[in-house]
Image 1: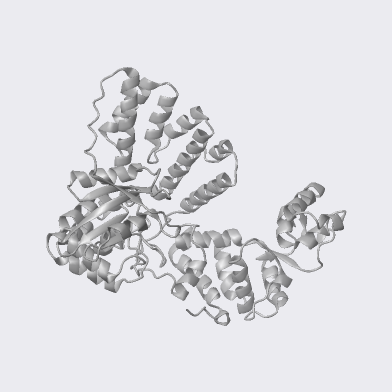
Image 2: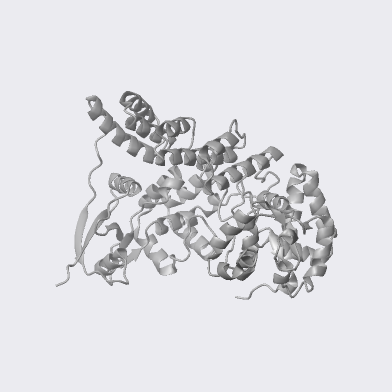
Amino acid sequence: MPIPDAADFYYLSNFQTVLDWVLARYRDLLSEQELGFAQGFVAAPKKPRALLVRLIMRKGQHFRLTKLQYDEIGDIDTAATPLLVNGWLRDDAPLYAEELATLLLKNELAALLPNPAAARQQSKTTLTTALAALQPAALPYRQWPGVPDEPLVSLTVSDICDRFRLLFFGNLAQSWSEFVLADLGVYRYEQVVLSAESRAFSRRQDVEDYLLLWQCRDAFNAGASVTDILAWLSGFHSDNPWIEQRHQRLLFQLAQHFERQQQLEQALALYQRCHHAGARQRCIRLLEKSEQAHAAYALAQQALLAPESEAERQLVERAVTRLTRKLKMQNSTPATARPTPEQHLVLPQLPDRSVEQMVAEHLGQGSAPVYYVENTLICSLFGLLCWEAIFAPLPGAFFHPFHSGPADLHSADFYPRRRALFDRCLAQLDSAQYQKTINHYFQQKQGIQSPFVCWSLLNQPLLETALRCIPATHLRYWFQRLLGDIKANRAGMPDLIQFWPAQQRYRMIEVKGPGDRLQDNQRRWLAFCAEHQMPVEVCYVQWQQPA
């Protein structure tokens, strides 16, 4: 696979694409500083622009020019001069010891300490700590005594470029490398027609709100005080639904941190103000732990009247069982679903085989092959049949060329917004048309990124066998359940599937090795299959004891 030629300045073209894209769609949201940068960038000489983009795409903010070499740019000092004049680079940025240490080799770092010979015997981490104790304040590079005599420059436009990247991708998780991976053909994306309404952000405040949440999450991951983060978020609310969802998810994670630290009062208070999925169930659990059984029971009954998901109902029903026992009340929760058929195997343990592979090899026959598919096969069939609905160009679903799926895939209104489209796709299950549609998209969309289709697993023989052996009615059950809660229900499906092509039938098998047990999402899928009389069983494996 050929690598893009640096001499073609492909990375510069990609960066300019982002600037042009953002200017065309978000000019009304840009600050004067951001507009000025975009306009000034176009007017700058080519090689300085190329150097700036190279630095933007590298890790860090500070760079030793002598360590940079790009054949297509040539003399780095010459290319850096206009960038310094424009203020996009600076050569006097203050550096803390920790920042300086990342730029220096161990011997160079040791030379800054009082006894360099002895310092060279220490680890770089120890040297960094010693230098920070010796000089806790930040100093410009040239003011650090003993540093190599060479130019060092620092980016000043990282925040501006991050905002352009945010406006283009709609998130900061995707990086500039998306372009390169697409250029190389590593990733291919569905080409969705983007409407004028396809914008992730409708006002400048949306951008600022996203950045605040990103900074808070980054600080939390770096170990900042949860109390401080909550203070930064005090009064925060966004009218943009997907940004508010991010806010609620962050609050949920902060509450989880309190809970892990056994700060149950703080955790409960935060869960109670949080609307993220699962928060209500955690409130019930914490009330129960805090010996507030009556309050926990009342909230559990409220949850059972309108459960937010199957997962919540499952956990709340267990809580009710415990609470009614504690309160000496009669338990009125529904009876447990009928048990799933089981089989028990004793197999030899081989170091190069997983337990699923061992069971597949043991049960498989020439006329009844077994495939290790877990969550991938059913999701792939769903993704192919419903390709048109999944990639429908609804406003706010796609807003750049690098989406592997719609931005609102896990939002509560994903299915309601597309109900008519999905209904049209699923209606094909009433005839043989669904097989033609699945085969059509399998051929036409091969390798294109999808949130459902696992191209590495799916091949023509497996596809044809699955369509021959799985009844359309069963596919409808699976697909409708997926649409009920995509995030929760796309996982937990049985590990193996066995086909009897001559008889046009199948069975799915959940494999459990020694000491393993069913997870909650697996129990829900098994109960669903039992409810709809779909062939599924659990296979428990024990290893043969050595003779």
